[in-house]
Length: 230
Ligand code: CDP
Image (cartoon, rainbow, N blue to C red; front, side, top):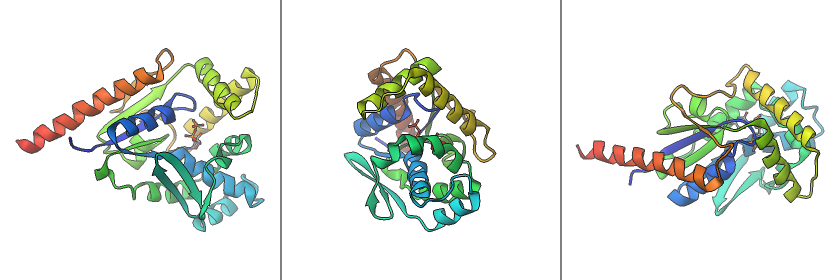
């Protein structure tokens, strides 16, 4: 079947990354977690002792940075040759990532890198601006949403799995702050592309979300095949 490009956007905790990863596995596609790139950049800003509010210093650092995603079963994030897959999930990075990723020049560098993806191989790309800015011609665009209480519950559970226990109110607050920053920034804010399919995952299981997307993907891939045959 023809290999397509699937863009999945949405706010934090809506289930994007887990779903995107599984959809990619089921289709034998590459999974691209663009949030991990912004997280890696933020990790480097913090590790370099730069104030994340210092835009010009952060941008200069971004021009001297190499970030790559290696999808060999489990996605690995490599920053200047070093594996930072786990380090980029820290609370400190999560708190600062929306600020660093609001810088236009940082985004331009990341988007340039994201567009190098060979979409002919079939890929699932998740983020905030994939369907709107990075790949406006994506074959399938999904916009995932979920109630804030459910998103906070998921995030709390995920954190707890890494040994970090936070009160739910704090998780809600952090999610709201990040959503606000992501959707009100000037450059490529988080928003649903006009032609994206919205999926509310509040009451869906991961398997259900994956199946819904796989069904759309198969429909589109078959459609492309038929067009080519005509
Ligand atoms: O925590 P979660 O997995 O939901 O977020 P993420 O996908 O790891 O993304 C972390 C942050 O990176 C987001 O809150 C955005 O500020 C930023 N981001 C972005 O600006 N554009 C993208 N395409 C992906 C992420």
